[in-house]
Length: 379
Image (cartoon, rainbow, N blue to C red):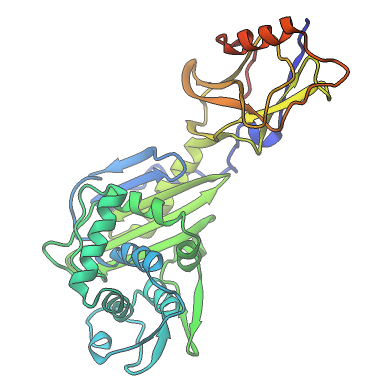
């Protein structure tokens, strides 16, 4: 039986080319002692400098504080501010003692205005005191796989045993940005709480195209610390700098360079579909899609080759979700990813074309055979 196979690949499946971004000044001298740029979509590291050195991190600590609270507290719970929380040193949202705030309001005050008072209120309400909350922060750090991180408090005031690294903070942020509540808070330019307007300290939200968060920090000992997240052309990048006097420009430079030199390619049920001729089927054709999404970070000048594999002959009788073949993606000639192709729905037999015994046996035998390459290149 002659088989005609056509791959219907949506435009989104072709390479998701990023919008043109002005190249950063190559003469820029990075001010950060430690820095990293991480692709949140794939986990690839695009740039690093002293990324595993343990350092003080100041208020970017509150990234962990926020996610622990979001995952363990009722955001509508009311918290009455105690005088000792309002009296904590450092940056503040100036929460009034005796005033009641929701957990959500305190999260905004903590992440936008870097309120140490809000951090203390949230931590002590959830775990009784800051020490107990720090234990919960460290449990979360171990769960995420942060290897060089130790928390002693929820706000980031200097402590000898309170430290992290650029790499760990990037991994933590990539995890947190998957949470919609967290993302909504850190991407907000301002928030009105009890009649007071709090503006986000993160200038990149206003100054850098595609920035969606996340947190600033500073103490005299730690210096300026900054974590940012930006999204362009379907690619999400996390940038972290520690002890960086010129952190705003460091981030603009590092992000511009990363966006200019890299892109994401994606193959999923939403953007990649293969139409196959099927013998004895009620409709004659069947669609197949990747079982799981393939998402790869590639350089702008990489050559991408996509090959499809399916059995020599397809007969009706397949069911939704059943493996029908495979999709392989090659980068510069090397296999980068492979994923099963599965039916999108049941492939019912045409009642007027019942399979013969021979055809039933052939279908079982052929679908069990190793598929062969039938596809070409996609760029």
